[in-house]
Amino acid sequence: MENLINELIQKAGLSPEMAQKATSVVLEYVNNNLPDSLKGKGESLLSGNFDVKSLLGDNAEGGDGLIDKVKGMFS
Image (cartoon, rainbow, N blue to C red; front, side, top):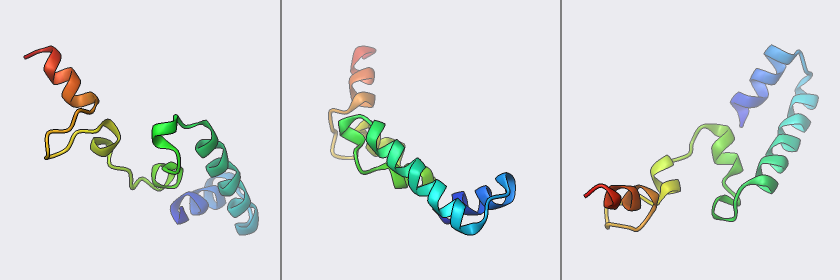
């Protein structure tokens, strides 16, 4: 989140306090508008620390996520 705050300060010319507030508003908005399966992942998304494979359910144990379903369609 620190990177987002710094970008708001540098690129939008916001004060550190306003950048922090803006980040909180954006995070709340993202969390409120994510599908149920992604609730609570907003901070990871905004921080760039989000594992897309876990989002889609692709895992080493042979899960049944989206990637696995698409693979199954073509095998």
